[in-house]
Length: 65
Image 1 (tube, rainbow, N blue to C red):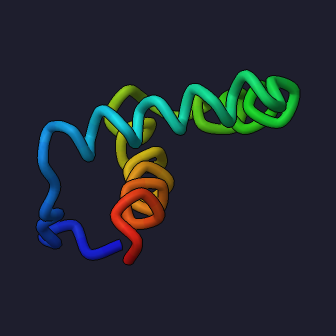
Image 2: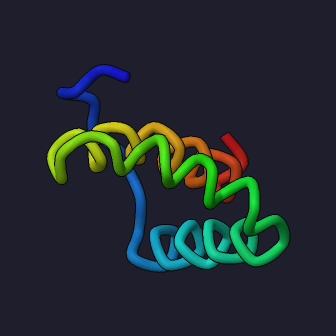
């Protein structure tokens, strides 16, 4: 992911992406626990960097990109 890349999203888009993130977690919590365990091995800074591409992917799906 380009760290300077901008994401064009409305607040409604961002809310929908977080809702989808939560839905995916609730649908398969074991998958998310193993992923979270991997991500939490880093620092708070690296956690955000690791999660941002996934959030961006969900956002793109919501926006139909």
